Length: 185
Image (cartoon, rainbow, N blue to C red; front, side):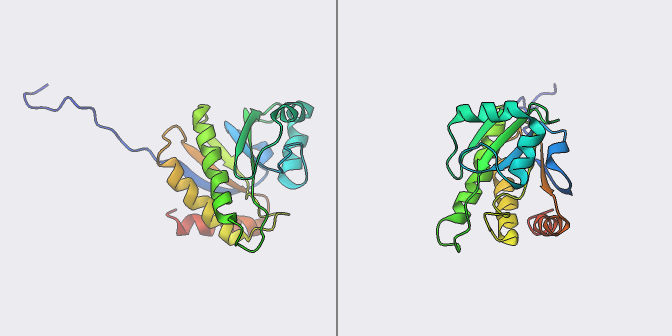
């Protein structure tokens, strides 16, 4: 090393790669998929029902031991029969017009899920469009919150390397892709 050269290592900021795909979240080979669950965590319709069906009965048995999950929080289970090693269950808010802290609760879903993933050495994660189905959250507003919160949160979580937003239907894909472009591609 030449005289006067710095011995301080250079630290490089690593940002997670964000992408949007159209497909079936239960088929993805990532470290974890996210379940847009209800507060009981015992299965339901939409993506929740699809994840439980694909994972098999052991997922339900493990969820029973968790004693539910409040809105905005997240819980981790194994993936069982899924290609993903883990499922992170989060409970999104029911849309009540926008004055019941829905935006904050939805942002908490993404933030708490990503933090739980990093704590458990999960590097790749796939999200559905949380709360936009039967919970009625306006899809465009939900997509903006999802992308913005994910960018902000992963900036401080270098373990998270890849985040995929999965749309089952074409319209949801278009909305998520547009939000990705607006928030920095």
